Image 1 (cartoon, rainbow, N blue to C red):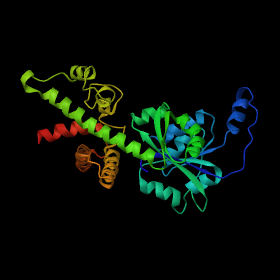
Image 2: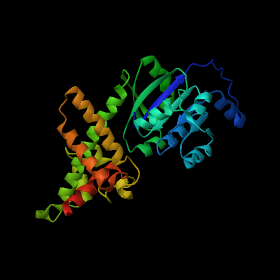
Image 3: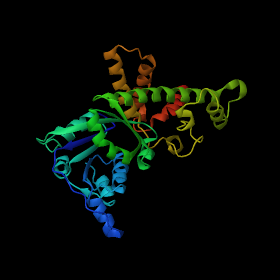
Image 4: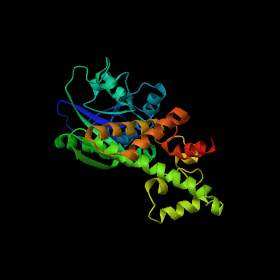
Length: 310
């Protein structure tokens, strides 16, 4: 599934860990004692996640379609191979970090895919958006995993190297469902925050409120939410967020629109009313068509401002 991590494990002979030594030799032996982990997809999320596994002593065998991404992880100490099939030949466990469902299908079932006639187990895991690139670098991601509980337990050790929270959600697909629900609420909350901030800044009867003051008021009042307190969409209000960098980085509008599409499909199939989710989907789809596709989804504030000026 899109923007989610999937860990795969094939049957393999047991490996015996060697005793730990001190110094450089000890570190080398310690890393060698851990089973290599395959990693496919070394983008903004995949590279820092793979690095955290390296930091925890797991040898990484990886691949990516972009040479620059390969080199970046090669310089961090990973072994780089040409294809997912090559990775599957060398690694018993594989993590994929891919942008869309077609990419996942191609990586697993394509001519040079992971499966390549093998029998594997998969753990679909949704990831909660928490300024995710920064969270990936700091190993503070939240993983929401669906599958057989025994298989979740087998994957948990790896996931805890990359995230602060690892939650078992139930059967296969439950982790993705949790992620979609979270992102629908996030999208609705971000639109509401952007509308509110724009209204306060433009409020003509008091010549407009200072955006930093308005943010401070919201965050000490009942209107506080993650979008206002940790990911403010107004440029100049907060440092270290996409709005402070022309909405570069973060979680793209395209990916948010895609997750909202999944949410709408689920709402239709389960007959669950989701009027705000539907409206949010329309807004982010319109943004994609208006040049915001690659900008962070918090650029909805800029989108609303431009709509107002037309």
